Figure 1: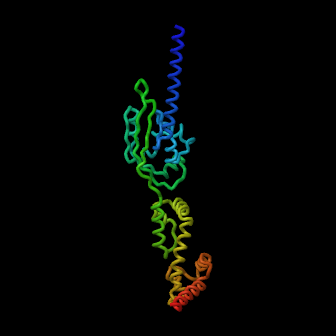
Figure 2 (figure 1 turned 60 degrees about the vertical axis):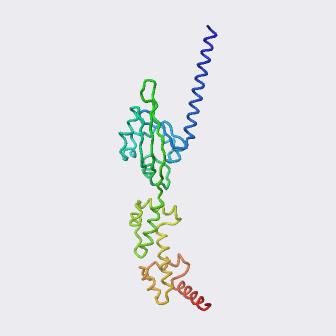
Figure 3 (figure 1 turned 180 degrees about the vertical axis):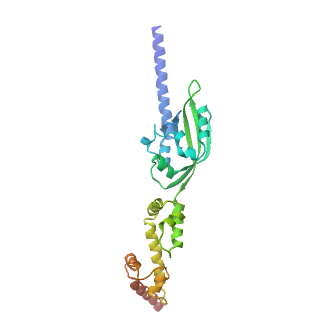
Amino acid sequence: MEGQGSVRQLSKMTQLARADNLEALAAKILDSFPFPVQIFDSDGTAIMINQAGLEMFGIREEEHIGIYNAFQDPLVRDNGVMDQLKQVLKGKTVYLHNFLGSYQDMIKYFNSKDRDIKTIQADITCFPLLKPDGTVDCFIAIFFIKKIYWFRDEIRKGKEYLNKHWQGKYNVRKVAEAANLSVYHFIRLFKKHLGITPHDYYLNVKIRKIQEQLQDPNLTVAEAFAACGVDYHSHFAKVFKKKTGLSPSQYRKMALQEKSDILDIT
């Protein structure tokens, strides 16, 4: 009898060891899963997020686990799927199609890492893990990313506006509105992508246009500036020299001389 008890005890220990190994294996599989995966307690609190989730959503793990709650998420509320999501607590599998997550809202609400993502579109499948008595122990959410919308289109719209309205006065608010961004965010993204501020881009466009007009021998320097919506006697003449290394008169003389040299050669 004593021997049988020892065998049963050893068998139980073996089963526990296997269970621990399986649990460790499951955790490893989830962390290596190529799609974002999160596990939530029955009250909606995050208890696990895999590496793909951290990377996709720019989440800082120490500010997420035990803090984030799916049932208090403004993005879930704004998508109008809160009641649908809570069906998982009734033991049902929930499918959320075309869920749109504003990345700027993620930064605002969850302190996600700042990136140039505008919106993430995903299909989300949520299913419960049940206790032996049939109640929900926790639930798992798997995110199938369908599309990531970046801010490149907004930068293009800003450039188009500046290229179209270069003759007028620079108005960063109107440029940002054309790009559908806040002034702060537009300036930051513009400089990050192009290496210069929107104002510098505007100045470069304006100066190129002035250079073109200065090459017209039928126009005076003042007329060339006026054709570009600038008073030659304003500070812009100094801006021109700072950008080109030449005064407007010097540039004009050089440009006309180059044209003359080309004509002489031909």
